[in-house]
Structure formats: structure tokens, C-alpha cells
Length: 71
Image 1 (cartoon, rainbow, N blue to C red):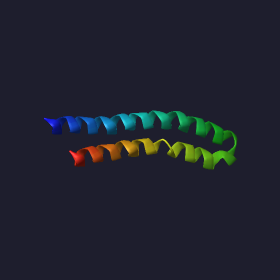
Image 2 (cartoon, rainbow, N blue to C red):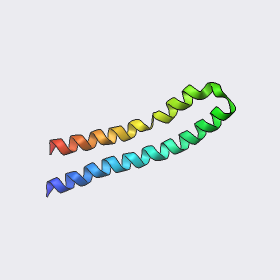
Image 3 (cartoon, one colour):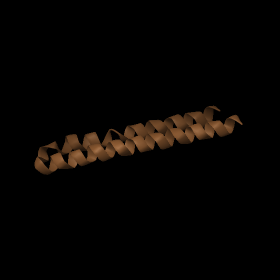
């Protein structure tokens, strides 16, 4: 019984973190492209800001792996 609940929790951790990261990347990515189209000197900052939300999805994956191996 507990293994099923752990699997559901792990799936929710990965899924919800992925959805949150995707929404954040969509907003930040579109804004970064608009800024870079006007001023090319912001390319590095725009790229960095686009990559940062991906860490949220990685943290969700880490939580899921920890859940699956602890229980």
C-alpha cells in the first residue's frame, strides 16, 4: 500500500515540477527573445535566465529518486 502512495508522490513531484519549470521557461524565454532582438548584448543574461528554471525540474527529479529509494 505504501509503495503505491510513494510512487504517486514521486510522479507528482516530477510532473508538477516539470509543469512549473515549463511555464517559467515560456514566460522568461519569450521575454528574453524580445530583449535580445532589440539589444544583442543581453544574449548571455537572457540565456542564463532561460536555463535557471530548469533547475526546478531537476530538483523535482531528485525528490522523486529520493522517495523511491528511501521507501
